[in-house]
Length: 150
Image (cartoon, rainbow, N blue to C red; front, side):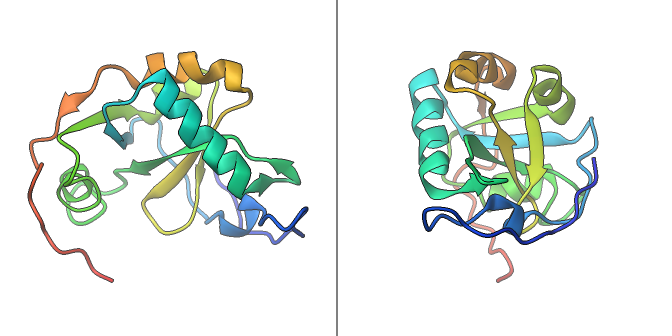
């Protein structure tokens, strides 16, 4: 999937997420990471928070944040993300991008690399997203405080 950045007008004062989409493709085998453990209720709260903050193509954007381990080593690798962005999470969810896409969700590279937004079509799809994330795993980098570049 390749997307280009385009600017859209905001509606009701909310920014359109398209303005924060960056170029890039998320490979099917790319691990997606999210601090956990998640529950259906937590995913619903986070998706609703995104909906209150952003539009997508003029429609409130229902989605959750994840990180894509785009590199094999370094800050944007799985180990880099676990030891910086997710170092405060004892448990994390790690799932291949293909699993999220196969479950019917859309992965959009947003904001700064390696952030992605998983777009959810309906609040009724939250249980399927919860299932796709799988069980939480122990973050073996928990408590590490590797400094990230600013």
